[in-house]
Length: 494
Image (cartoon, rainbow, N blue to C red; front, side, top):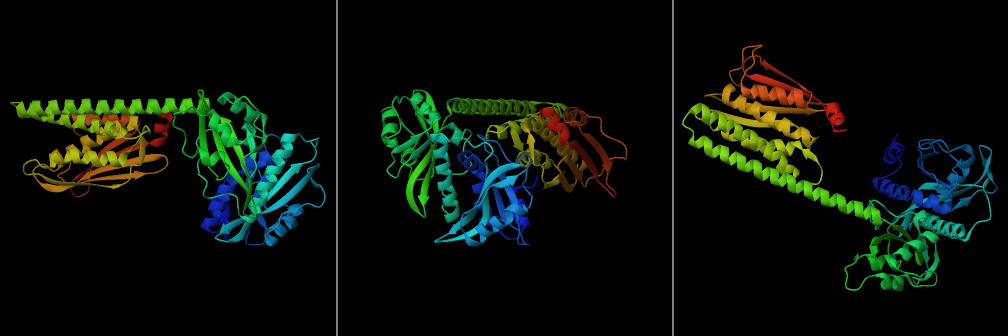
């Protein structure tokens, strides 16, 4: 399915600022649908004087009218005139009589989407509100209040006062919804309505009285424990003066609050405060943070231990009396150091994925000391991108590439000057790495049988499910090609 941005840009009539505004509005589609008890559809104009749907939200507390997704569809003939009038005049247009949709009576309201640019507002789209009249019944006080809030927000959409780009984006997990709890404030911050769920949330915080008729600021002041830090944005939220979010904590309960100031042509008339008990969610988040910190500490300690082992191997190599023992210990030291690089990278972040380009750049520095061997002058450089890899595959790949580059310098370029190039090519489903040197090369079809070659085969074929091939470059030098299926990596992660 095409994204909202793709659909909007495809019409060729919207700027980047328009797209950002429409994205923010679509992000509050569920709020609008739940307050209005109606389907909400966002339309943008096309180049041929029509309109196309770029977002659709179904109400969670009422029956939907659209059982099939209409995103990407052009506006239907019965709505076209109404939508075009709202777009051209900049005024809200209601259907004159019930509109029948698939044998269901509906009421349609077309609301122009105005984007403010300084003091001026430009209409960039239309929101339609489709209310199912087939389930009409005597509305409750909560439904009346929800509808009033929806009307206020639609009026703000038409005047360019909603959405507010100053409001924080990307809310944390557990953002409050209308059904979780809604409080309506007047211009002085006094509660004029509190839904049962909102009252229950405040009761759990320790407020045992009725919210209606009370100043929300005074209520929160009573709830907050003395001499305890609280969210700095909380005063702004509970007064209803700014579109912000905050957490309210008391008695081991955490309630997330989101305030939407209500305006009538720029004049503040009150606010809507959404609230949700997120105690369990915050506990889970804290547990995850603690686990992430523990994992990072483990990686850090493993890295330190590996570096200690590498240091011991280096010391032992210097004290060895035979060249063969010294070489074996030096190679072991490099292998351990390569593994330590991966753990060091993992200890610096939260994710268990690794930016392998960063890892490999550090691995190449480890190999550089090999290039300093007597009578050998080697230049190592890499091209292309490896991308992000899961940690369990970063270690074997880093170790395998260390072996290949080391072999290319020590054996391919032994006693001469040359280059070692590492070329990475990544697609959606494969990673191909070529290690190419300008050395003396191998006899075609002949591959080394040393420990390094055995290690590389085991790592690439056994742990990564890939293939590896050695061959001589035309003229001189050796090229080793590694091919790793990324689907294998994703399947193994699962």
